[in-house]
Amino acid sequence: MTLVVPTRSEYAAVAGRVRSDQPVGERACVPTMGALHAGHIQLVKEARKVVGESGEVVVTIFVNPTQFGAHEDLASYPRPLSEDIARCTEAGVDLVFAPLVEEMYPWGATLDSMTSIHPGPVGEILEAVDRPDHFAGMLTVVAKLLNITQPHHAFFGEKDYQQLALVKNMVRDLNMPVKVHGIATVRDSDGVALSSRNAYLSTAEREVARSIPRALTAAQKEVGTVAQKLAAAQALLSDEIELIYLEAMTSELSDRLNPAAIADSGRILFAGRVGATRLIDNCDLNSKGSA
Ligand code: PAF
Picture: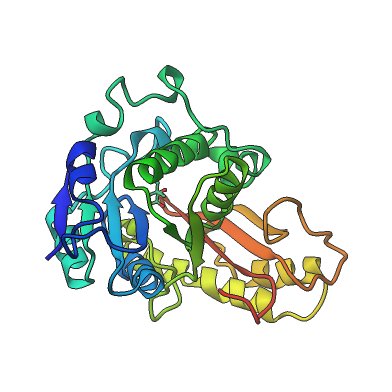
């Protein structure tokens, strides 16, 4: 049975003792904004593999206001808490930390009124161009959630690749005592990466979205320069997608890859609008990596 706690003090009282009266060995945390899908459950499974049956797996469910822009979908973001808890129970999660906004931000949920995390240069490119405060809000809440849940391991999906890179940088740069695990993107049978925002797509838009994984796979398989790989992707993207970016970067996102080079590692990152829905996806530059 999964224990659900909404406050830091209740969490502190039970953490480490959910599986037995004695503190357990290692703890893993899977931070989420809820609306859990098979991608999140994969993170839980990987977390369990790492901490084992005697360890503790914690899922946090919190729709974080400070990472949404003024015109984004904070109010309409899905919040199916009881279904999420049922999915956690089914997946063998020990503890769910599901705080209210007031618990996380007692002095107001705006970054201006508090100490926050500066994301650094990787936080100024790609997603940050359209969403300037997103990563400061995301890193700030991740830092808070890790401080509250005190895990040895934290799990993030590669679907949000820039987020994963930034969390790794934060943990490294601020000497945070947690090991960050990046887990390969889970895809539907049509190749579309699982995302809570896919629910916004109409049937026709979903068909358009299918061209994204096809394009990324084409880029991966293209044997040639970085520019040729990007061109192969571009050729397969539906004309109905409003492209925001399609970039080839080093794996840590520290630099753009030279278009004329034949690179043996890196990442291709895509963002585009399908109707009103902004979708992101990414893959390893070459077929040997994860898509
Ligand atoms: O990926 C998400 O769901 C969120 O950005 C996270 C990491 C839970 C922080 O709010």
